[in-house]
Image (cartoon, rainbow, N blue to C red):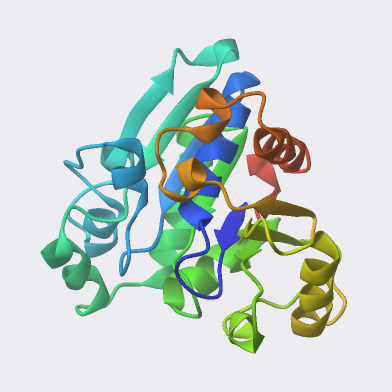
Length: 242
C-alpha cells in the first residue's frame, strides 16, 4: 500500500506510523519504506538512527536487506515491524536524486522485501506531489491511500487518478470549527465526487508525531477511525507486477 499526499503538511507520515502500529498489534508482519528522499520524515517520527538507507540501496552501495531496521515485535505469529529509512543525510539523498538511479531498483527492492521478511503488509510512505518516487510507489501498490487537507483547489495538485478499485481518500487535520458536511463539499469540488474513506479532525499530538497516537490515546475517536481505516488495507502480496 502506498500513502501519498498532494503537498507537505497533511500528516501523511504520522498516519503511516499509526497504520503500521495497528497492523503490528494485530499480529501482522509489516514493513514501512520511506521513499521521500527529498523530505524524509519516518526515521525522525520513530526516533531511529540510520546506518543504511533506501538511498544507499538505490545508489548500489548496499543490498536492500542491509537497509532494513527491525523496529518492533518478536516476529513470527506475534507480528513484527520493519523500517527502511529514506536516507541518512542530505548528501546521501543527493547521491541518489542528483546522480540518478534506475527506478526499477525501487520496484525490485519492494518485491524483495515482501519475500525476505515474509510480510503481510508493505507500507510505502511516498514524497508529496508528483515525482519519480511517488509515481513508482503508487504504480506498484495495490491500494493508494491519499491524504489531503482539502482546503482549496491547491489540494488537487499531485493527486493520483482516483479509481474505485485502488484509491482511498483520507481527509486529515480538519479544524474543529469546520463541520464535516463542509469538508465533504470540499472533497466533491476537488476530487470530482470521490467520497472520503474517513475524516480525521486535527489533534496536536497526532500532527506533531508525538509518539504513536493509537498507542498513547487508544480510546480517542481518531484512534478508532485509524483502526477502522487499517481494516480496509489489503496484504503485501497484492502488489502489482510492473
